[in-house]
Image 1: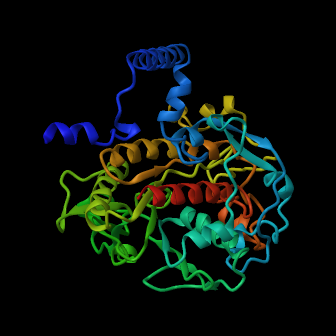
Image 2: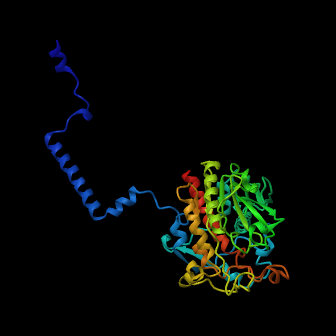
Image 3: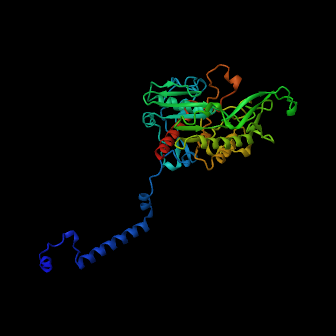
Length: 419
C-alpha cells in the first residue's frame, strides 16, 4: 500500500527540486566570479565602497573645521533685514546711523575649506521657524550675546512680521513669533555666576586705601538672571569673558571670589577666578539643564582696537577684512596686544568644556578677520564717541552676526535631528 502511494504521489513543486549537477556547477561558478569581481573592485576602489557604507557627511557649517578653516570672499548677499527692524539696538543699527561701507560689510561670505568652495547655507527663516514650532531658544551671557540675539530676531522677523517683543522669565529682552509659537530671548548674566556689590567702610585691611568696595562673586551660584530658566528652553547658548578685565573691575572695585559662602583663600586673581567660574558653571549646566536640551557655549567674539584700548583712542576704521597673515600679530597672547583676551579666554573655555555635553560654538577665528565690521564711530548718539570711545567690540547689524545666525541655525537643526 505504501509502495502504491509513493508511485502515485505528485512530484514536488519546482522551487523545491534540486538543480541538476551541471546547473549547480554553473551557479557555483557564477557566484565565485561575482565574489571575485566585488573583491577586485573593493581593492582597486575602496573609497566607492566606503562612500556607500559610511553615513553622508554632515551639512556645511556644523563641524569645527567649517569655522576654523576657511576664507572670506565677496559674494554680495542681500541682508534679510534693514534698519527698520523693531528689535534693533540703536548703537548697532549701522544702517540707520549712516555707517560708511555697509554695502562692503555685507558683501562677504565665509567659505569653509571643507565645503568644496560653497558658503555655509544661508538660513531660511520660514523653514527654520517651522522646524522650531513650539520651541524656545535662550541666550545667557554678556552684550555680545545680545548682539547675536538681535541679528537672529531681525532675521526671523522677515518670515513673521507679527513678531512681538518678549520679556518674561527674567529675560533682558526677546521676541515671540506667534505664527510659530516660538520664543527666542536673552538673559543678561555678564559673569554667569552671581555677584553682588559690597561697599567697604574701612579698606585698610585690604592693604589698598583706594578700594571703594568689592564685588562678591559666588563661584558656585548661578546669577539670578538665569538660575530659574534651565528647564524652560529647548536650546541654550552660553558665553562669558568680556567683563573679566581691569577695565570693568579695576583695583578700586575688584572681584573677590567666594565658595560655599566663604572667601577663597588665598584670594584669586581675575583670570584664575574666571577659570574656577567656568568650571563651576559648566558643571552646574550639566547637572541642572535637561539632557535633551541642546547646549552651546559660544567662544569669544574678538575685538579690533587698533592703536590703543577703547579708552586710549583705539580705532577700527577699516574698510576690508584682515589678511590671515595678520591675525597672529593682532590676537596671539604672546604679542601682548590689546586684543589678546579672546584667545586667552578661549583656552580656558576649551578646558572647561572637556568631558561635558556642552557643544562649543567656535565663532572666534572666522570673526578675527572682520576688523571692518564694527560700529566704530557711528553709534547713533552725538557724544557717544567722546564718552565711550569707538565701538570696536560689538558688531554692525546687519553684518557679521548674520553669518553667526546661519551657523547657529545649521547647528541647531543638525543637533535636534541627532537627538
